[in-house]
Length: 462
Ligand SMILES: Cc1cc2nc3c(=O)[nH]c(=O)nc-3n(C[C@H](O)[C@H](O)[C@H](O)COP(=O)(O)OP(=O)(O)OC[C@H]3O[C@@H](n4cnc5c(N)ncnc54)[C@H](O)[C@@H]3O)c2cc1C
Image 1: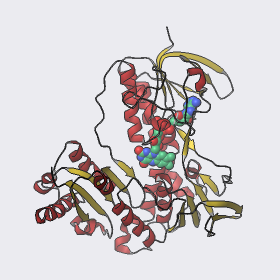
Image 2: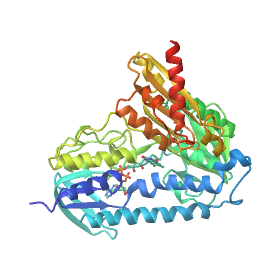
Image 3: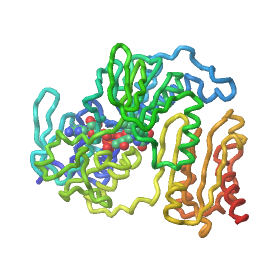
Image 4: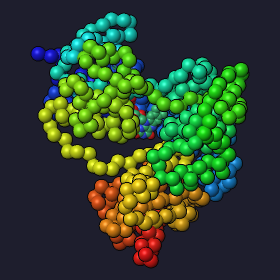
């Protein structure tokens, strides 16, 4: 009766995973993508480009070797925009290739164009030259993601004032950079450019930032940033930005920041305004986001699902993929098991941060009796070998049940190391796991044992 069993709008992580899952269940699927190539924000302007840029910077700047050879050590003396872009285009090509192959192997059809609803079971797809075609489906997944928030007071010009989508297409490495917005994206870019020895000022109107992280981890991180001369301007809003060759940013407290380039990274909005959602009977909030039933990912119209950044928190590629899978399973009558209680959060700043479970502040608020264990990477032999001067792991345990409540890491390898903590947490493991098990030596993972023993020593003294 319909052209397809499932039409997916957007080919980012949630759309891709939903499309493949639907196809694996033997359903006919069409993915509509307005971009030139499939992959979404994740592949083209978000996750993969920023992480590739980070890796290139750390390699060319010799960042990981500076503990031994000094702060002025560099693998490549002059690092230009071309150096940074070369690795990016190769990585993105590879990502797109893998995805296209996945789609074709699973008989997922793709169509390039802008989709908009013309009815609850029908979309119109407008191609590049304006031609339109209508398709109907039994189910839809809105996986259109977000785009950067661009307030009127910011003079974006694609020359020296950028949003976070444009910065990945950098034509020149600036000598100085102002980053407005100390959310995950702003912090990542600020620290990546700082690792390139660019003079960075990070501005955040609120007095604190990354508030969902454990305070002790943030303190360690901030100490690291100050040590590297990243200027933090917290607690005062921006009142004006003027471009006159360079960029002059004035803050409410009267401070003035001058830089060669500015990145505005304060928020993103759902890309729903062009979807004509009224025709499908769906509402959005003031940021263009769609509300769904968390367990099923259904919108207020039961055969239309939404997943990924368009539904808001946590807005990660990792969680978006899982949401896409759950939506597809539900649409075709499979009951997916509920997701594990804890998922990790990775922030690919320099140094990187990763966290899973409760922070010390949350544990205290819930009045759970607890003890913490701390390990510093410089206490591990692997840390000595790598020349690490910073990096720390904090584990929080219940003193009543001995169970791990949270793991928080800042430093080299944090986003990989966190998965040990995640496994123990989701499997309801206790401090004994860390004390009794043997870890490879020398590894940074040994920090788990050190932090476990640190907490245990405090617990037995109580
Ligand atoms: C700079 C940056 C760094 C990030 N780093 C990380 C990270 O390290 N780890 C992590 O887990 N997450 C990271 N994220 C978040 C991650 O990129 C997103 O959570 C993820 O991409 C969301 O996936 P999605 O399924 O919502 O689709 P998106 O990736 O947002 O893609 C949506 C797609 O829909 C298409 N589309 C929109 N409207 C239409 C329409 N009307 N018709 C047709 N197609 C349409 C768009 O062209 C786009 O291709 C980062 C994001 C940014 C911006």
